[in-house]
Image (cartoon, rainbow, N blue to C red; front, side, top):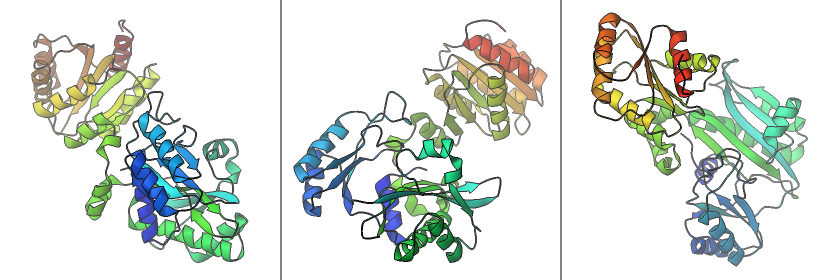
Length: 390
């Protein structure tokens, strides 16, 4: 579950990570009033959306006085924000964060993710933070320092100080940076984060270390341990289809292709996406309907797939194990008789009672393309999406 920058900074404050003073606004007048209350002669106005690259898209602006803050907030709130992560259509901005500006002399990068190969969290740090960090990591990976740490013990003081020293931070500044690293590790573990990031972490002329930005993704599988985290959910920022799928208990992820996939089982769903790609196509989604492919769930899944205007063909790839194939076929037939199918549909069933299921589908009168093998299903789906025949 992604949360906004201002919410991540609330979390930072709880763990004593320094962040600028500020508040969120929904209107230009509210933004202007916040700036007037903060005082000073430098302010940051920041779009609050669940997308990175805001600075490159004009979603982070600096102002010198309160009236200018109101004007910039009006500009940001008045049109979709387009960043490298949003696509050309952009996203609607509903909130801006207004903060007191903090001049700085250096900007660094800190981030924590789970290193699945090492089976441990890893703290990543770079002496070169800012908007170009992704390019830096891609082109010069050696400048990204890494420190793995134990998920029970956290990041040790010695490891944190050593990392701060490698970043060129010494004395009180180095100690403060090391404390922030340890606090970041505590947040990652205690709050069940899947990603935690400060970019930039800045050093001021006085040697203070401040988190100017904050990015936090929370593991939604652990929300039962943190009921308060649900208050940070912003449905308006979530993919509409992913939110609808969650209501039905599906696992759904929007992808970039044009072949809609309905599969039962996460492993089979990943394999289906892979074989579509190998056949020269591109999946439009990852959709695992789970073990109970009853008519209601199948209907909901079809509505998700067919509601995506990018989808040019649908592939249903179901293994009848926990649920028999004939029950699945019954669900498919019942679902499709209640809606208009405007794209080709390829169905591949395998497992218990598969022959009975195939006879049911053949006798349904529905315009289905039957497939027997995994490769056959992928080839037919790709051909159907291209408007041809396998």
